[in-house]
Length: 354
Image (cartoon, rainbow, N blue to C red):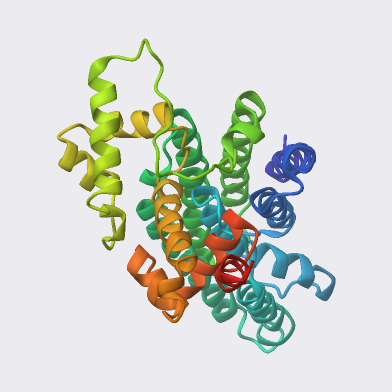
């Protein structure tokens, strides 16, 4: 079979799997930010499968320019998807849309202006350097946030999805850059298509087997955290003592106020391994994300301060910073997600005359 036919078959198989994945994600997660980002990522990946051409020298047809732009900007969607994957409270904002549009615009300019102007190699290199920049940004972000996931099995699946996507994205960008202008290579395209299909196939099968809703499960809403969750009677005494010690750290020492609190820091204070603390917070207290665990304590402190008549004149930002938030924006978003109202509205309602 000619390599061209093999290349076409591999691309078609990858696009078919991406279509299955997009439909599954729409069914299970179509109403959630992470689900919509995953669908957008699948669609952008399908555009990539249709348009990549290692070593291309000719300027692409203007009809392909929108697909190429969509494929190029898919790296922005990957960045946002990975943020949503490890932060259940994350939701894309207007700035993120502007970044996506900027990358789309730059790619369109490359296809319609730089390429026809005799700068095709420069355009290819610039676009793929941009892609590598987002790959690096996403990798660093994932490394920082990966440990916050408290569900061990889900952490492994999520880590594989991210590593596979970033690995392929990095290799593809390097191939495109080094082969730019050397002439189309059927062999390189087949190898690239095979790698792409392997990543898409493995991720799709993994999500279908585990269940996208389980992998991307959101943190369930919870009530006040001033009192620890009830502990089963059969629970070992050691676990009961650890839960009590952990809650003392949170309630008495208010360790959640400290900057950059990590699971490792808390585990060290409790003299236990990190994996055991993850199981404790997840299994005994019911949290699925470490940042949600911390933010719940911070929000409870902020709610008490906002409802206190003696602190009626204290600025909201001061209360947010005192509770452990690093800035007002994340505090406002987390507070509204937990209570349904803004901090200012909450204070007004609580301090309103009876």
